[in-house]
Image 1 (cartoon, rainbow, N blue to C red):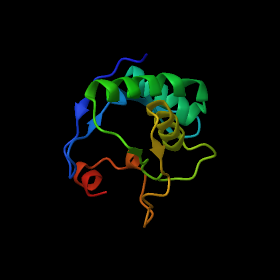
Image 2: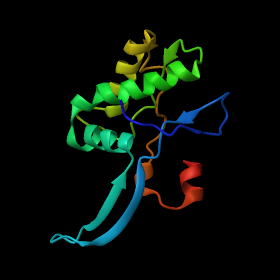
Image 3: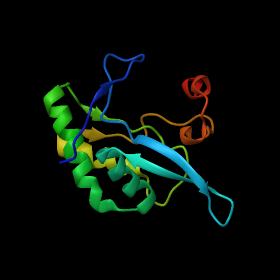
Length: 138
């Protein structure tokens, strides 16, 4: 099971957590032959699994990610009756957040509702927003 470093997330809810940081460090190393910026990126263990799922389409990592999330949920012991994933910000052939929500709901033996919340406007992906205030506003 992936190691996690759960961190409390403040917000307008009773209690929330992030299981870990995705990126530990990222250093600019230059541009490739097409002019695209390249970075040397170190990710947490969980961050690397998520990266493989999202960008490598590696569904084999879903079990390990869900093992870590379910383990945390069981130790935290909230009363969970429903998993509601945040709608993805862009269309993909496979939606990692939906795949993980469905697998976690099955593991915890609770319902998963993809239609409980909907996106009302298009927003940019947070990975492309660098200014803190702008990220918080979104």
